[in-house]
Length: 460
Ligand SMILES: Cc1cc2nc3c(=O)[nH]c(=O)nc-3n(C[C@H](O)[C@H](O)[C@H](O)COP(=O)(O)OP(=O)(O)OC[C@H]3O[C@@H](n4cnc5c(N)ncnc54)[C@H](O)[C@@H]3O)c2cc1C
Image (cartoon, rainbow, N blue to C red):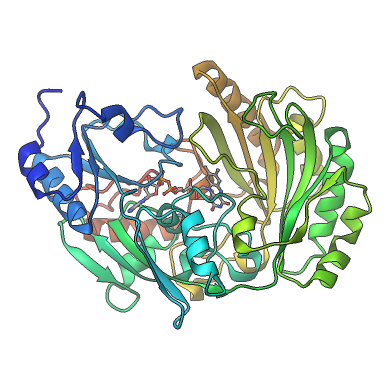
């Protein structure tokens, strides 16, 4: 790409970190996302080492007529699409974590991953609203919403952001909160990464409650009985319990732990914020079904990150998710008719997350997304080896989505939407407002989120 319009020498001299251009040493490593199935080919990659690198990158890209895509881990790189005309701004080098235990908050830079944040604040008896995976980026996850194990009690992570440091498309570094920049601050809480590049978030934590977590494993053949019992059970549990009903088909590969390698299960994964006795009482109906393995026990916040068995190293994967308004018995049967035992379903894990509780929308929480008009969320993912296996996974996902269409919600959840397009992630009124915020702060659409929000066109 000799016709690269970027002033590479100028940008290089302004950076604390580094600029990597196509073909230069380190290019493949610099452009590689955690999601190995995605082949990112931007015009350039900046490996930011300081917030000032973000300012320099935004200014250099704007001058060259290029766009900027911020990325920390690349977990959700799938929907970004082709990166022609784009500088990929990797933030994984921005790893500062500043705890403020007195205020119950933490400031995290844009490259911090959840495992590191959880460990840092646990020593103060505090916990953030992490999702299932310790390798996911705090900022990307939080901008998109953030469905946590603690979420039925405390809601979405996005609604716990206190302030943010951002660089807007005009190259200005701003410290924003609900008072200083109400519209921009509203948009980044759930609206994703289209509005500005975030260099740090200040996040409110919660005092670590009693935590019990783990997995009940049953043979896959019992999927209908177990998932129906789990569905009935979810209608009875308080918001202190967040759970997932899931089908797991572990491939016979060495990366999978020996005790489950090559086997298939139906499982219930859960976290309870109640004490031992209450947790045991609540779990009794599920334990009465006789799991073959039961790992539910008192857990530390760090241990919660192992429950979902998410990959800890980059993998080739294909997945997608969608919201269900509700999960009546018929919907569960439809789920099983596609993903259940005896079906030719090539995905490794297919789950139904229980929402409700504090996941219900509440505009008073502030933020573009404050919850979901949906009772459950379905997500499924496969480990893939090549284009053919990606295609097979996507076809199977389409079948699952089709079977559950009668119960599908009108909106989707941005963080776990891993394919481009699909259902809009917000209702029309929210999308309109997001587009107006985008037009205000980034009318030329320089900042490129993986789930884009285009600037509203101004009348006349
Ligand atoms: C194994 C696994 C488990 C998961 N579990 C959960 C879960 O339990 N709950 C849940 O809610 N989600 C979950 N997710 C989804 C996850 O929240 C999304 O993939 C999220 O987008 C990842 O953020 P990231 O920064 O790691 O990824 P990236 O791909 O680096 O970022 C995703 C997008 O976030 C935006 N972004 C990132 N950094 C910045 C920045 N500094 N400034 C502006 N925009 C930025 C960009 O639009 C970027 O394209 C899971 C994903 C995986 C792979």
